Structures are given as structure tokens and as C-alpha cells.
Amino acid sequence: MKDILLLNPPFTQLNTPYPATAYLKGFLNTKNISSFQMDLSIEVIQELFSKKNLLSLFDYAHKNRTIHSENASRIYALKDEYIKTVKGVTVEQVARVTYNFTESGIMVHAYLMYGFPTQTEQETVDSLEMVRQMFETGIIQSGFWHQFTLTTHSPICMVLNNYGIIKDNIHTSFANNDIPFKDRTGIEHDKFNYGLRKSLLNFMNGIRFELPLQDWFDFKIPKTGIQKGSIQKCLNNQDPVNIKPSAKIIWLGGDPVVTHTTKTKKGQTKKIDLLTFQEKAETLQVKMDQEKGAWFLATLKKLTIGEPSFTFSQLKEDFEKQFDDFELFWYSKSINILRDNDLLIVL
Image (cartoon, rainbow, N blue to C red; front, side):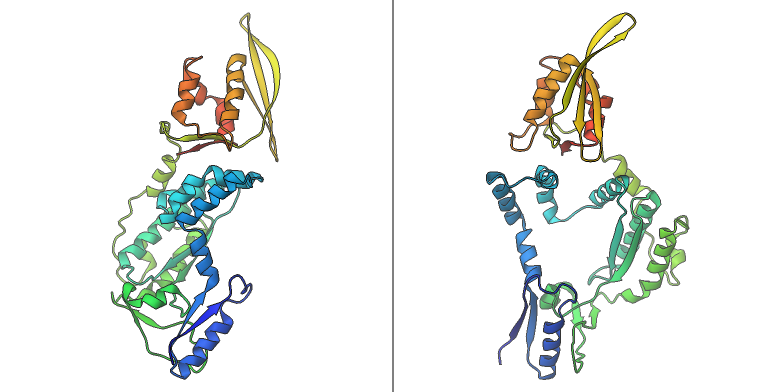
């Protein structure tokens, strides 16, 4: 009999993962019948969120004007950043995202994994050091270490040689979902279990950050290659003063209510615009000179979703046609308030 392909229908296993196909494969193994598993949910997600199809999805949403909600507008505004992450993310990106979640009052739980095939002891130790620094800086609040498990339904199971995996030929009389294996590197990942979990428990309680990583293990580990303060450096670099000229400036908010007023200081009266923006949870108010306020209101319309892209260099050039000191305006208290809310810079 030829190989049998067992398919899991997409989006059907809501509470228990892969029960039927795993049991069937286990039974077929007892009959020495070769079989493979595929989960169409995983296949659909991998295909849908490929670079090609994400571009198609964003293009469709724009052409058909299906961007209605505030959340959809934010996602669309950052579409270029989403596309960039298809190839993976960096530690610096993770640090920035977790920092922003934490600053917004959203607690972050880290789903941590170790023991991947070909993963070295050095990489495991370096991962622990990065996790230690993230807890120490307060950008994640909880976590759990999960050791890699080889399962019959996973794509990696079909290309074992690519990952240096030697599968143990152990068959059970029933389901054979989790497969014992050896890593060709010869590393025993199991020995890291206790030290990783014990250190994490302490970090979650905000203690013992100062201990050398070696103290968490009863066997010799390599020194970490991660420099002290690496995560803090990532956070320090997240809002550079020098914004790239090509950075896109996007306005996600609505039109403000404008109130004309005056301000007198040392005998001189200045015309002021008070701009009131109504957010879902709060009301924002910023003040500008009346002439700059009029320019800013006209410019906001150019920065909204659906309009041609407006870069930082274009914004600066347009401002300097009428006024001086663009940097003084851009880094003013009023603009900083809006940047913390609906005025986005997409690098």
C-alpha cells in the first residue's frame, strides 16, 4: 500500500489538537502502514500570511475600501512594517513591542522555547540572558519555558535530515503523536530544564537578577555572548531624534474642533488655535500659533489613509515654505502629544 496522507480539516479542532488523525496514524503504525499528517489550518495560515498574499490582501482592502475600523486603519497604516516581518523579527523589535505593550498597561507573557534541533548550548544560554534582561527592564511580566517536542503532524517531521534529527524507532500500540529523537549535535537539552525554570520563577518575582547565569545550573555552561544592557540599548534607540527623510507620516485620527483664542504675555497679544481631538477614551487638546494651526489642519488631510504617501522630508519642506524652525515645531509639546496617539511615523 502507498503512503497515506491524513488531513485535518481547517479550523475545526477548537479544543483538542489533532485527536483523530494522531490516533489513526498510531493505529496505522501498528500495521506497518506508512502515513503522514497535515493540518490544513497551518497550511492556510502559512499561505495567507506569506509576503505575496499579504500584499494582495492589503491591495484588495485599499481598492475596495474595506478599511472601516480604527484597528484596521492602524494595521493598514503599518502594512510595510508587517511585510518586513514576514522574514522574521529581531530582538530589538521584540524589545520595542513588549515595551510599548507594557507602557500601554498590557501585560506581556513570554512563550519561551528551547531545545530546537541544532540549537547549541551557547544559544540556549544567550536566550536566557536576553530573557533575564527583559524581565529586569520590566518589559515582560511572566513567561514559561517549553522544550521542543517532535510531533508526527509537524512539517519538520517530514524533513528530519534538514534538522539533523535521528528519530527513535519506538512504536506504541496506540497513538504515536510525540516522537522520541536524538539531536545529531549530541546536546542533551533536558539538562537545562530545571535551571531555566528556576531562574525564570525568580525573575518573575523580580529577584536575583544579579546572579551569574552559571549559578542556576549544576553543570558547566558557556559564558553568555550577550552584552550587559543590550535590551536597554534597544529601548534607548527606539525613538531616534533623527527621523529618516523617507519615513512616512500618517494621521489616524479625525478632524479636531478648532477654537480661536488669544494669549497675552508681556503686553504682546498672540493669536492661538486650540485644537480639540475626541478620542475613544479621552479628549486631547493642543495649542498652536494660529498660522501654524491653519497649516497643520490642512496638512492633516494629506496624512490620512487613502491619500498618497507623505514623507517626513516632504512634511519638513512644506512647513519651511511658510515658517522657520521646523525642528522646534516637530518636537514641541503639542506634536509630542499627538505622536503618542494618532500621529504615526512609519520608518
